Length: 236
Image 1 (tube, rainbow, N blue to C red):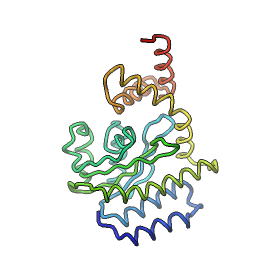
Image 2: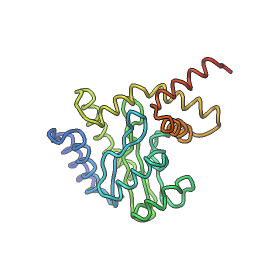
Image 3: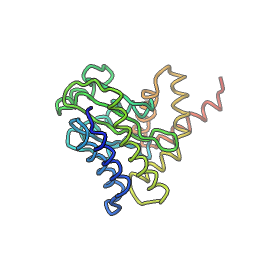
């Protein structure tokens, strides 16, 4: 990703020092996404954040294809951005069609021109709570410079969200994140229990919780409590 370092610095400085508070939290986040899109040599950008169910939700995207990428990942519970959050690290996917675990969404997004995807986690209080993603309409090998550039915008997003949380600003995104942060410990522990019990990775363990919550129309945090209670009642 070839980026003019001076242009990057100017853009980041503008986003940090001249926020349009009248736009609201979602509006500010959309401004960050749009700025990244205009600066990066990519086809599109998007942002996902976890909600009160600890599920990733679409927040903002630069275009329709980016929105379709995020919605597909939400519906299927898999994808580069999901993995970026669950594994808490940048996920570089040169060609989404070449990754077997992404097969359920690969055709959907590839038809919209989403091929190469880079997802970088957004963190609050040391926990991954979302993912900023950029994508290309062709296969692409993402390098360290790409990851560093996206990280720079992630830092702005983290500042916007942290400031909103501290100020108790009214926003659907902020309310969902606050609930998720309040319940993250019990959910993460339950995921660990399921991983150890079933020998699966964190994405599959969380999806097991998510799927049951959907079937029973309950909160993931409630099921997580029951998983931990079961361990305490039946120690190995």
